[in-house]
Image (cartoon, rainbow, N blue to C red; front, side, top):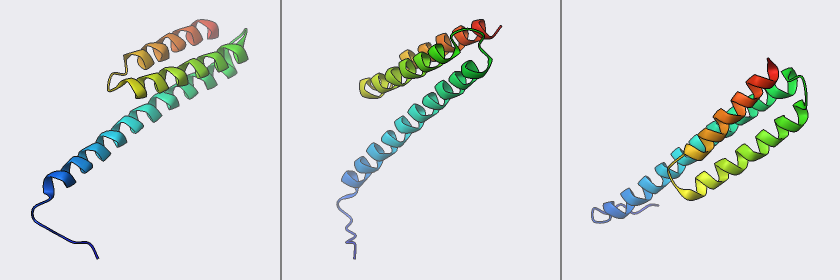
Length: 95
């Protein structure tokens, strides 16, 4: 059975905060990867030339950018920039 003491709440709160921060970071990373997958799927289906190449290249570069941002900290500018750039390239190749 778990022991409940009244003197160790600060350590429990730090563990709670670190778990919460890791959950938020993982949720943001997963959301960005889902965005890259959606843009790649649009590129695979609707692009007129080099659809497979641009789809996979954007997907791989996006996952690498998300992995770098996860390791770097709380700023997601690199991943968002790559996602916007990938979306613009896909929009140009679709039209």
